[in-house]
Length: 144
Image (cartoon, rainbow, N blue to C red; front, side, top):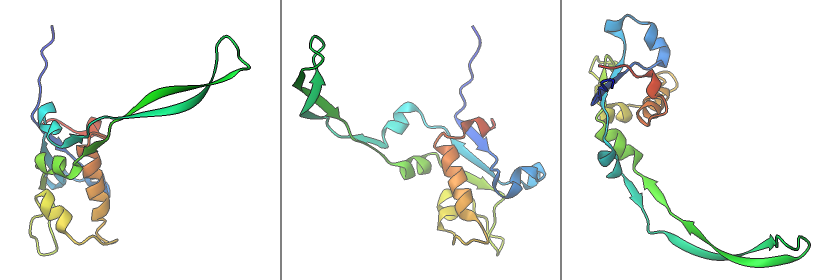
């Protein structure tokens, strides 16, 4: 059987502003922690199932022309996910990003607190990091 290594940490190199074309030492990178299933579950809230009885019009298998009304139950389960909580729990650490005064923008909190302007295009960086941490772009992450 092949050995499987499970990594707790990951590193992502955003494509934002042609970042990946820079020398490795100058690239903006995002280090983060993978959450376990149990850790993710803390940020998911499920309400009790709601059972709804409703009438439907259906065709009888034996008499196709005859319409019958049947009752069936529909179950709705509402799920809310605290995406911001998940992002904070993953504790992204940002490397090589600075403000105009050369102060490091090295945490998620600092990044989202920055003024977002068309010139600095931070909104697209925040979106890219959010998408990656949400799992939509995992194939772009590299191991630390």
